[in-house]
Image 1 (spheres, rainbow, N blue to C red):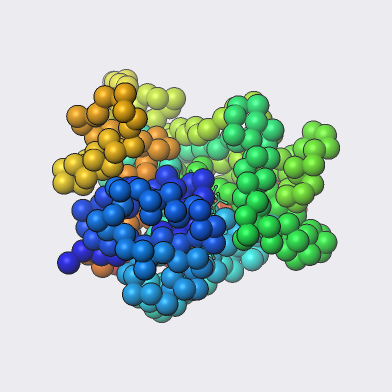
Image 2 (image 1 turned 90 degrees about the vertical axis):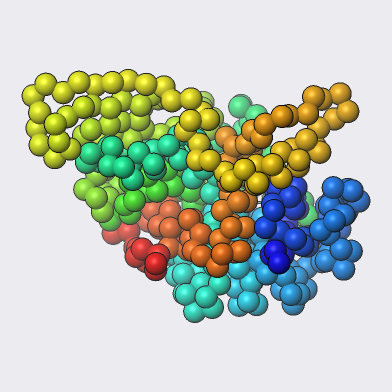
Length: 416
Ligand SMILES: NC(=O)c1ccc[n+]([C@@H]2O[C@H](COP(=O)([O-])OP(=O)(O)OC[C@H]3O[C@@H](n4cnc5c(N)ncnc54)[C@H](O)[C@@H]3O)[C@@H](O)[C@H]2O)c1
């Protein structure tokens, strides 16, 4: 017998995952949940869902979904809701997948407190928690994790990672628009008042480091290291814009410099007022480096001793080569879902090509379904997620103190 999955939050982002979860071969029942009934209807009316979706499995609140016998919930709601909703789900006996970040509120100490609660709840309830970080399954990140596991980097020296998303939309999809539609629903309309009364009126302001997972997850997961200390600097918006005012962002850009547990140093840039868009990451080791889209490998006699005549080989690995391989049965089912979404004039795909944030979506779906079905720890578990969030929250605290060096809390490695 397969597993049952409940999709909570079918807004802009959640809707992109519905067909993938529905088509996964380990899933034999799907349930939907959103306060906005019309957001579920487009799936319940779709013949593609009929064999796994029963009309009794449509819920208009998380509270009702938690009372059901569904095995696991996929929570893709507004970012400030994730942590309490995931805890509610685990307390109700359900495994849980959360969209990033673990939570997103202006108070860095509260963020750290939620990390603590998520780790404690998953440990106490025995339910699995997974963070749906898309960068974790970017092709080059998968490739580098495999190279690191083989010891190809030698000693890690340093890394830099960046996530740039301009507030004004100079590069499309402005954060201003994102905030507008996330607060334009029954649930979303409550947030501006809470934001103002619980944080801004009390002098607690937000910053880009509170959404750190797209940048930090690469270096942390590739190097298998966590941050020990950070010094960060924040820069204020260059002029007045209502976006920064209503969202309570004191800084439009934040940069953190981290000392890592493996002796390396990592620079993280989170930009929200910038002429750039997307992700960037370089990882430097004594025996190999990833820079730009290139892999450089130095052939030394040994990874630990100095060799006077090393030879460096440069290569540009192909995208498909860099990706991990999904099981064939899973690819076959995802291909059916992909082809079902094509228009009448489109030519059906013969082979499955991963899509969605550099092809990460199918990997996230497979990892969660497989972990639930096998009752095993997911790759991006509570302990890993807490490491990402602790880096961002502590960097924000440091930026508020003009770069003071602060210790980054850690909850240890996930139990094996
Ligand atoms: N690359 C990425 O990883 C990436 C990209 C985009 C969005 N996201 C994340 O995805 C999340 C969702 O973003 P979005 O743009 O889809 O937001 P959205 O506002 O469009 O959708 C959220 C939905 O959740 C529903 N909801 C909230 N609480 C509920 C409850 N208790 N019961 C039932 N329904 C509830 C809302 O009604 C709404 O339809 C965000 O947290 C965001 O950070 C991640």
